[in-house]
Image: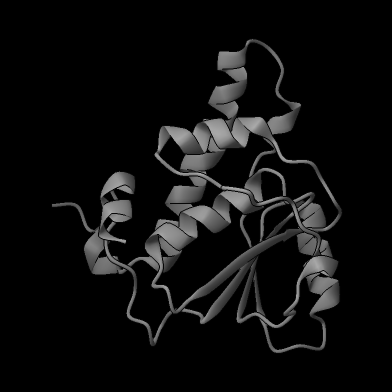
Length: 163
């Protein structure tokens, strides 16, 4: 975990008593934003925090996600997109939605449950055209925004102060 923190240049996580015990990241197809968020969160959170991701509907694995994660020395391995219906456990302390569709769905599904739902709007880089470098830049932006949100939400405030 220390090596991952050093690579991501992020401080230590919040004390375990403050962190949610289980977190689900949700986007439209679990192909770009939510799997990226899941992997980045796993790099900084304690192993005791269960982190998963899913999509509202099924999608295909996106090679640009693999490419931008590889730039940070990370990999999704053999992981493939999952839907909310594919999840074995459907109780989470925190659900983080990354698209309007995912947020609406999460609110509907959790209406009668004691679960926190947070909306972190993230751009969808799949709609960006242009050169390979322009497309990669859009995916990098999502990766960096996710790092910032994950750091802002789950890392200790005293560790985030400028030195």
